[in-house]
Amino acid sequence: MELDEITPLLWQATGETAVMVGWATLFTVLLGLPLGVALVALDKDGLRPMPALKGAIGVVVNVGRSLPFLVLMIALIPFTRVVVGSSIGTEAMVVPLTVGAVPFFARLVETALREVGRDVVQAAQAMGTGKLAIIRKVLLPEAFPGLVAGLTVTVVALIGYSAMAGVIGGGGLGDLAKRYGYERFETGVMVAVVIVLIIVVQLIQSLGDHVARRLSHK
Amino acid sequence: MIEASGLRKLYGQTVALDGVDLAVRQGEIFGVLGQSGAGKSTLLRCVNLLERPDSGTVTVAGRELTKLGERELNQARQRIGMVHQHFALLASRTVAGNVAFPLEVMGVGRRERDQRVAELLELVGLGGRGKDHPRQLSGGQKQRVGIARALAGRPEVLLSDEATSALDPGTTESILGLLKSLNRELGLTILLITHEMNVVKSICDSVAIMENGRIRESGGIGELIRTPGSRLTREIFPLPEPAAGHITLTFTGHPEEPVISEVVRKFDVDVNILGGAIEELAAGSVGRLRVDLAGGERDNALTYLRERGLLVEVAG
Image 1 (cartoon, each protein chain N blue to C red):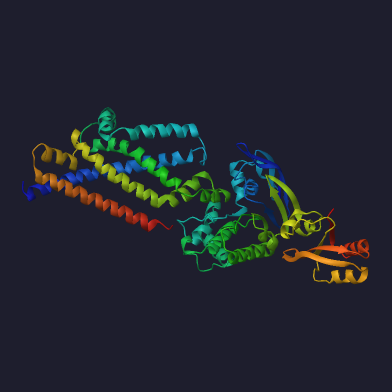
Image 2 (tube, rainbow over the protein chains, first blue to last red; image 1 turned 135 degrees about the vertical axis):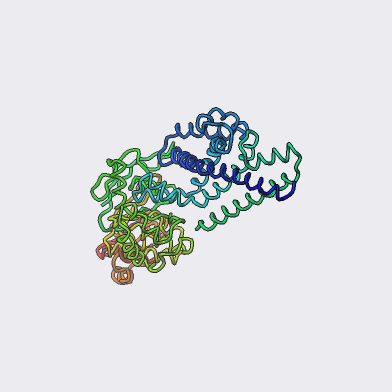
């Protein structure tokens, strides 16, 4: 295949990957951030100690983390069908991607929040700050650089997961690589996919690092 | 202003507070002195209920904190300032943002907040540094931000948790000077804990000495120094254990008066000076002298010294 044949395919696949990863990232943040906060706040010496609930959430998160994405994706097909109405295609892939990334991101959020000094939290308590305000005004802003770093890692992981979407007809770069590189031995397409992935991951990581560094006042 | 009674706190098997009573009068600087592990930090944190005592009550400015629910407790805490050993500033906020924090929590409007923050920074000598981030400041400056933040809610009481322990001696002195001037000018009651005798000597009006979760001795500094056998006096003046018959004299008020030579002349005694020092305390200067008195009218000499207002302790 010539380059001018590859280019449109590449654009389309990259677009599909971007859509999948973009939506999945959004939902991952919306679900994973509160979950990570809960893991910290419900801890036995957290803001609102409820160790039993924290333990339960921890188990769920660990179950999510222990399934390889490929297995999770296939296992979730019935659930995806209920949520999206279909189990194939780019939109459908957002569901397993989100489910796969939420536990991962929640753990990274938990780690970032734990980095916030205990003394700072206690100082806020000594000033009569309520629990929600401590989360909103102390924990999240103080942990922000760490959260951005965690999000960067999550997005890169999501790009990796999304490549597997090709296996069950999800579209995107993985699908392109599978159809042209694996099934038709089109080495040119394969090389192009690899190059695009390397560039995209590099860009995301550099952007994330840059933002995290800019925000850090330590 | 601050009253605590019967405070007990256990951490597992360790007794942190073993029945502590504390009374801090309005407008005074009260120091709790003790080694690490004595329970003083737990005591301080029980005053604003950062730690909840297992039993006992805490009353600050007439409100019994141990009875309050979470919301009322948070309101009460807004009137109790606290400064921390390691400053506990938010790295994500500027200096001004840190000082504004308690005001935001209290729901003070933007304009009033900005104005108050500027005043507070001026008060602690950091006018114009509002836009800096804490990492750009020295330790002493960070603690000044901590103090400004603690004062934001116009507290009646300031709690100081080893506020100068992480600072070098010169900076310590300037922070202590600031605390003292806030105490004098704003009538702020200060309860501080420290392991440094120097802090007690230079700014405290009253002191409690803590050991193993109990208060061993407490009261006004002048009063304690005039009490025979006082631990505080012994710790301020570390003289060796006296041999039998040795006399320890404590001078308060005017230690520069030549009482020793008077005694020698009047009572025909020999005085052998074994050790001694004069200390400048917030409560005035105090001298302590270890002597051996022999010959002549020894007993009359001792009576005379007592009449002159000296504390005379004879080792048995």
